Structures are given as C-alpha cells and as structure tokens.
Image (cartoon, rainbow, N blue to C red; front, side, top):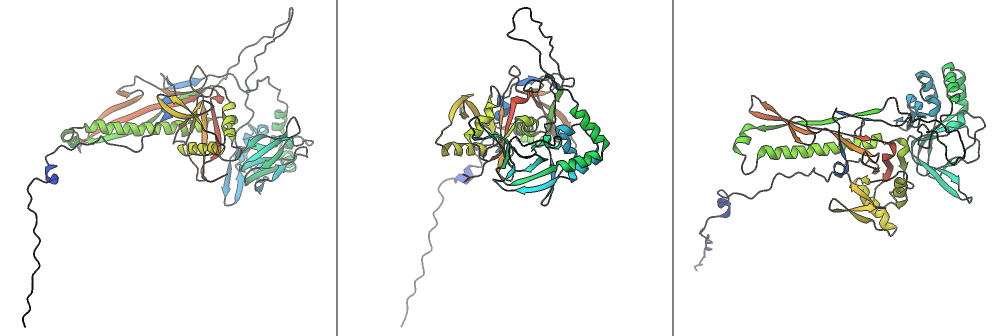
Length: 470
C-alpha cells in the first residue's frame, strides 16, 4: 500500500517595487525642533520685579532709625530625642541682647528643661503666676486671650523659634496675660526663674548687664519701632510747637550684586560642520541662559544674603491657624501690610489653596497679568514659584510682596551696559580655543534683590500641603 505525501508550498515573498521609506530618509532633510528643555518654568518672580540699575555694583537702603529689641528666632540642636538650645542663640532674647559671656549663656542653656507636648495641652493659664520663659523648639502654640464680650480669641500663633514669658524671670509678681494652648505636637524648652536667679547671683557680668538693660530709657517710637517724629495737632493760640527731625540708621544695609556663572564649551568641529540648519552655538547658549535664569530666581528666593525667604523680618512671619492654607490665613497675610502686589507659592501649595477654597464652597477669581489669566485672592494674583522649598514633612511657605521703589517695596538689582552684554546684566565672553580645539564662553548673570522696608515681604510659614487633611 502506498501513501502519498504532500510538501507544503513555500510562501511567496512579495517583490519590492518601490523605494522604502527607511532608505528614502537617508536623502531627505528631516523636519526637526529646536533643542527642548524641561527645566524652564514661568519664572514669574523675575517678570514682576521692577529692576533697578545698581551702577556701582551695590545698592544702599537708607531707612529711618529703628530700635532693635531682640526679636529674632531662637535656634536649637537635636540629638536623637534630646533638644538643646544653642547658648549663643539666647542672645535673641531682649534681656540678653548684647551679652557675650559664653560660659554664662551655656549655663543658662543647661538649665533649660525639655517638655514634649501633644495637641490641646495648656502650657500657661491666663491670670496664673508666671515663673519661666518658654522657648518653642518645634510645634505650634496659640496665645488665647479674652475678647470684648468675654469670649476666647486667638491673639497670636507661635511656631518654631518663638518664645514667650521673658518678663517672668525679671518680675517675681508676673502673671500670664494669655493662655498658651498647643495646636500640634511638639517640644518646648523652659527656663525657670529660680534657675535664672541662681545663675544671675553667681555672675557679676550678668547682673551688670541686666541692671543696664532695666535702666535703659524708653525711646519715643512709633508702632513700627522707628524713632518718633515729634509734632502737635489740634492746638489753639500761641502754642509752643515741638522741634523735630528724622533720624536715620547710621549703618544702612548695602546689597551687593551676586553672580551666577558657567563656562559653555563647544568643539570647533561641531561649530564648523554641524551648524546647519540650526546654529549649534546659538542653541547651546540659549539653553545655558535659561538654566542661569532658573538659578537666578532660585537665589532671589533662597539665598541667605538677599533671598526673600531668609531676609523677611521675623515680625512679618505668621503661622497658619490649623495647618492647611485657609482663606483666613491668606486674609491675615494680606492685611498685615499695605498695598500687597503678589502672592507667590509653590504649585503644590496653590493646589492646596484651591482644595481649601473648594471645601468652603469658594472659587478664586482670576485677574489678567501680562495677557495671562492667573488665580487671585482679594484681587492679589497668586503666582506659581517652584523655587519655594517643600520640606520632607510636606510643608511650605507662601510669600506676599509689595514691589517698586516708589512704593517702598521689593526691587530687583542688576547692572546693564556691562562688557560683552548679551542680555540685560548678562554677559557672554569668548575665552578662547584650547589645545583640544574646544571653544569656551564665560556666561555670567549679575543680580540681587533689596527689601526697602520690612513690611514689603510677608511669609505664611509651615503651610501643610498634603492631601486628605480636614
């Protein structure tokens, strides 16, 4: 019996009848974009600041004489769960301002007692005997007073680095004028009056310093702490008018221009052979300048010498009432200064503001700013600035600024007309070609910022921006 077998037919391969697209692209000119860059942001701060020419490389801010009474923040060091005040930081207390005996300051720091607290605890009760200074290392505390009609009202919100009760160590009969109630968990250090008195008795230098402090004459000041200008109003007849003059600070602050620099390097072969259809050096320079401008805005916010966050006065910093950025917090931030122009916040913080407004059935209005619609609160534009840092605890800050020299606000500083200027206050200098045939250009941007009066900048601190908090 025979069996027939069949062999499967080999599939026929279609014969190419035209040029493939892959081969054709070898002869075609590809349509391409210019080099793109993700780091570029809107940089609103650079846009809204009025830029002032600092011809001498520095800008001096002359102000009326202000009396400083020791209103800075106290700093701490933390080792595990133990918190200790830095001894020199006790000089931020008004009664110890200018006292430099490090041994005595260290002894006072050693006497500070640590207390960890939870939310809702009462640290001091209004009307009770006050016998210690409280230094807040971490957390938020409400100072609660009594309103006109006997109801409780929050007088102030204290946060990290604040303190209260300085009068308690100098006056044995002192009483608390408010109730101090914790809002969050945290840590305070307290210095009892008995320990303070023991160290004072054993330190002639401290006794002498405190005697001089208590003997200081009361200077005539206005509510801003400036030297008062004597005047009279509402008088009749031949009234003896007081003489007056405006006293100035003897050592006004000067802001020097800062610099951001980099060296741009391009190989001559790239510049010679690959310059069409796009100029390689031009696009390398464009992206380098974009990165410099991003760094410039970062410095204007965070630089320790002139950055807005670090140079805002402590008296112009406030704490949120509950954590998230509520309409009440924004209102307090705006109402503490005259003619605010802009609010600046990280984009995630702006999203948190939107959530809080939505939760209350509110919708922010929008205003036109340079042809763009931006959200606003009470008519003040809220501008994104991703240079404002976010902490690992998901907290950030909101800045409010008033701008312009005529308005005694914040100004940007630069110097135009510099050698090899490519953009205002930005120069590009040819540095030569090295032995490896690499062209070098020095790219430099000069800038700074000045706060003309303290209330030109305000900061809402410790703003919680995490989702889901109510």
